[in-house]
Length: 207
Image 1: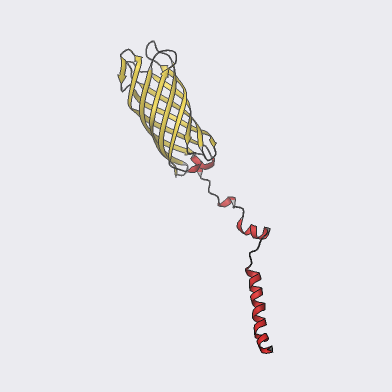
Image 2 (image 1 turned 120 degrees about the vertical axis):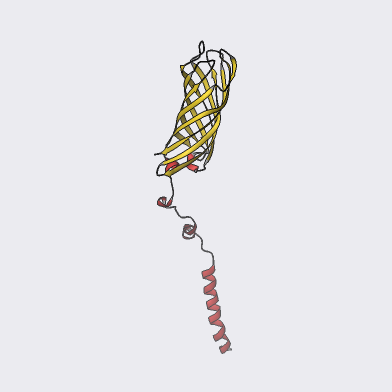
């Protein structure tokens, strides 16, 4: 009997000690093993994630139609070159960006060559912080004609729908983008309308 106990007792003691060590630990110490603060130094920000960006772009109307704008009534292919600057001024986190876009456009209507500068707040999504290359947007603003067709309003209501692809920081803080969509306007103080599709591209600077 003593021999049996001398063999069994060490096994029981060792098994009890093993069972205590294998029991799940609870409390702050255990929680700390699973919930640890992330080191900010290891979090990648990227140039476009937390800063503004400025885009310079050149484009051209691919197709356009005017209605009651020039002296010929309805005309096709009246939109010509387009130059622009887009500046990111704010962000709704994890959703979309607020941009300010300035567009200078050239037209040819009824033998005349109007030129216009548009001021548009432009909302694009997803936000640049996502680093997702594709984006979509819409803008609505005011157009001011430096040169206008005879007898027509110098002010217009401008609106745009855009889709594009952007690639930040290809060379240091410089990237590029390409964009297509609709650029339309309605003359405010007279009859006249433009519906146009465009294609543009340019450089994106992050800072």
